[in-house]
Image (cartoon, rainbow, N blue to C red; front, top):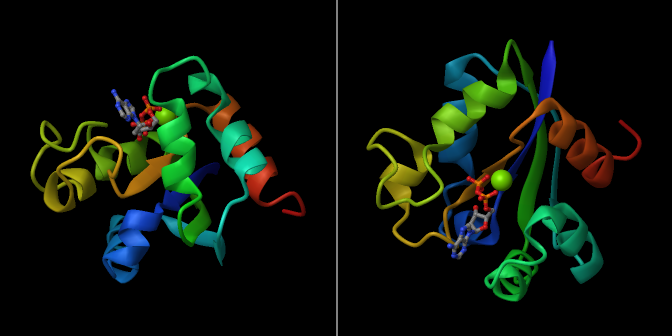
Length: 134
Ligand code: DAT
Ligand code: MG
């Protein structure tokens, strides 16, 4: 069984679609194995997005992701990394397919509702960052 880190970012929490996102994960057949509502500190946010540290949008991204509570969860299932990224849709919500979370609920690239790990390596790193005791 593969595990992935999923975040419902502060925009998703603000817009009251936590239940909607979790419902899509459950309907797909994926399993929630850990979940927490929390507000990220700047250091954790920078570590989470460290691969983007040199990008022009990095400071703005860190400010956004720390700007309110988010839901962090560990999701488990067969090929869960790829399965959740398919549910999430493309990074840019304008081009994300309708029927995906981003395609259905977002319009701006930074405020794209959810995060999902993109590889087994990043899933392991991100799960350890958010849930060190798991
Ligand atoms: P993903 O979240 O689909 O894995 P990513 O890892 O390339 O996408 O980028 C991480 C987040 O950074 C993304 O969810 C939203 C933000 N982002 C990406 N590209 C951006 C851009 N060109 N301008 C502003 N924010 C961007
Ligand atoms: Mg990414």
